Amino acid sequence: MPFASIAWRLSQHRLGANPIATALNQIGLLSLIFLCASLSCTPLKIAFNWNWPLRVRRSLGLCAFFSVLLHFLVYLALDQSLAIGAVAADVLKRPFIALGFAALVCLVPLALTSTKRSVARLGFRRWQLLHRLAYLIGILAVLHFYLRVKANHTQPIVYGLILALGFALRGAAKFQKSRAARARESTRDAHPGAA
Image (cartoon, rainbow, N blue to C red; front, side, top):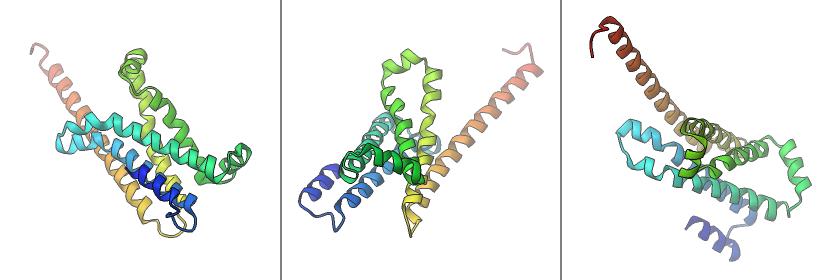
């Protein structure tokens, strides 16, 4: 619905004085929302013991990839008129574009390996290691937004805090799990005959 709304308003000349910039900004914001939502699924499970976020995590991740790809295609086709040289120069010259492009490049292997068949083919450990790129992508996306905004940085900071809270919950859960495993190990060492 949001994409259809943007497309319709663009076709009706209802996106303001600079419609391409407005479309880019709105699609970019949708991309960040989907990224943050997909990265929030595990923290929600940790914080509230909800299982349903894990069932929608892959769909949210694919929506994030679609949004980021569309964001880039609008920039490439409408803003830069398919001038690959100008895009390459922008990537090299403007840090916020370089960060956004890096996020897109990192998202491609995650989208391509999002199926159950990919998990079986790669093996769970390698698949999991690859999909940890999602954390880096979230950071790149927030930095891209922060550097893109010229005046009020409130929105990118809020998204950055959402990501940071999610990372903190993951880290705390991992630490707690590791400490529990060490406690079990020390109990077994103290009572080797115990089952």
